[in-house]
Length: 213
Image (cartoon, rainbow, N blue to C red; front, side, top):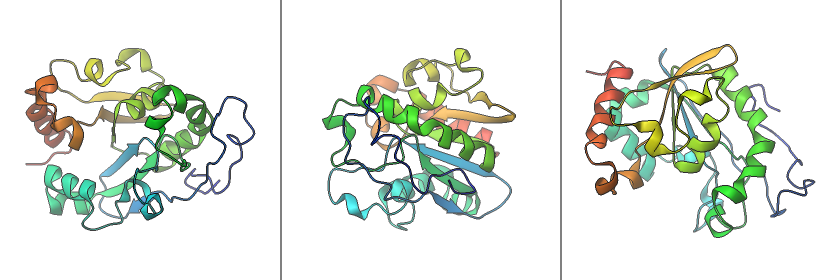
């Protein structure tokens, strides 16, 4: 395990009867950006993509200056503000699969892999000590929020977690307290009929939470 909690090597899933796909590998590094005192942590599902999965060198491909997610985050926060944050990005499941988990059965397929990874994720949170954490996607929210000491206070689905009035949840893992929300990210923004005004409420709450004017 690295000092920040991210695994260097791991054979838990390969030796587990509950993990159905054994052809997994730790091919991707966490992303880190040194910046100011505001510490933003981003959590994705896993590093596997549909096309050219070998392109993924760091989590969420944030090392690519013109990557789609990075450009979207820069637009959401403001480019200068986002690039001044201290940022750490990781996944709830660290290994790359031969195919994206959605082709195996999605979140149910992922559960035993997450169970083997969650100690790493806990150590990453405790090491980085973020002010704010955003997770991306339903499985990432479901599994990460289950780790909270006060997990009973937040819904396990994005819909129930966001509620009607957008505000950031005050989460705690051991002695680390932080603000948290599942992110209304790129794909979610395209389903306005589901989330409606919550999109603008999310932007407003995000700026308030990070003290962006």
